[in-house]
Length: 403
Image 1 (cartoon, one colour):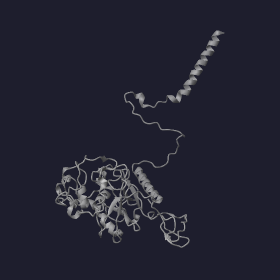
Image 2: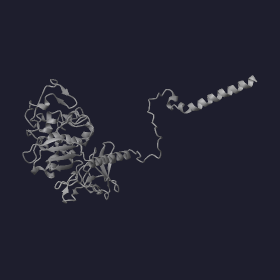
Image 3: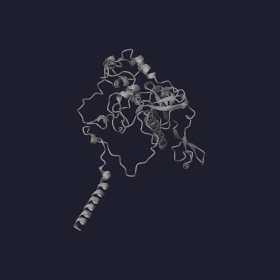
């Protein structure tokens, strides 16, 4: 579906300076922005392609099919172009890259060996006795958590290297009793290795379907709203797939550098760099990949001595981006309804004004008469007329007898 919506840069009518679409005034001469009628452009790059999007009802994931050859695949075809700037709830994937089984194949290779101990002993400086202080279930914080002002300002001591650290653990042998991933492994500091009770590998699409929305891939509870600082486990009311990456420096603010650093943890769908603010937004195809990357890249460096600040990205306030996300979700929902043989055509009739559908009630199966709806109200007026006619007939007979 061609639903990409974006806003073009505009040129000042006074000084001819090119300005970003979000600027209400010219950066050079401060002249007001003139609202052009063609400011909104709807991308039509996909109209010539024979590939279409479809939604798998069993996984609620987007896949692609060819309308002529009936070929299906998980990867976004190169002919469809890059994924839209805002894809809403459902991930579309990176165009032209064979990522369907890439991370599953990597996990197969890693699980053929035991997991390595990343450090010799677990540090105890980050431990605390649970229950000693009051716990806020809304923000997932204990009293005193905000006292450490140096948190997330010091560089990370360890870093996870999948090529040397990943492997099978007790979680792979026990079965489905434990289904979460090791948080210390993602941060590069697990001292248990093969004896760990959690997974030491990458999360995949199958893991996301198994975990659900109420917990992240590490087993921590997600909440109804995001924290004020957009850190923590995220919000289960939205499919958090975009990471805010702050603390970038000039030599690391390139798409290739950021892509190579974050694609290690999962399929990256889009990288958007804001040079003016020295930040970037990395969007993954799957939520669990973003959760793993958030912990793995926190306080790490790319190519210099920067300290990355990784948080959850807020929703894009741009109304054009909101429109694109709503259109993307609507297209996916329509595709899901069609896959379940549900008609999307409008009904040929309309209900009367003020009509309310009666709520369904649990009916007894012992009495067959209860299987039918109560239609007594439809005959109330007719019954009243019959009673009045009967009384009138009695009055006529009495008058005849009196004569």
